[in-house]
Image 1 (cartoon, rainbow, N blue to C red):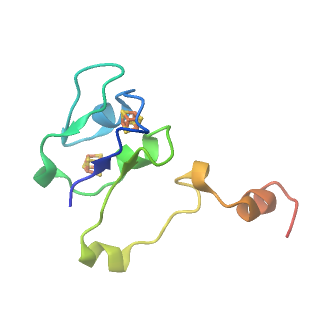
Image 2 (image 1 turned 45 degrees about the vertical axis):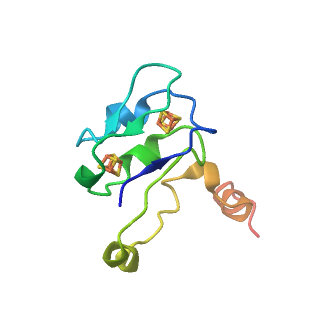
Length: 94
Ligand code: SF4
Ligand code: SF4
């Protein structure tokens, strides 16, 4: 299933457009939220979501067979890391 860009959070930086290896997005320039122009081309690599600097601005929806195998990386999305994980990483313990 294609990625979703939430225009109310997206700043229009274009990073997802530049990072996507399959040119799924169309982008009209700085300040404009990209659009998903070729949704069927997405192979769910996650690069657009991982490199987006704004938490919650873009999401990818994995097809069900991939959801079963998916494991969330503890370091891939540091902006949504739990306070407990940050404390442990900083040596604060729990
Ligand atoms: S998940 Fe990968 S292939 Fe799909 S839109 Fe994002 S960067 Fe492109
Ligand atoms: S990387 Fe994130 S903030 Fe930048 S254009 Fe894409 S969705 Fe918007």
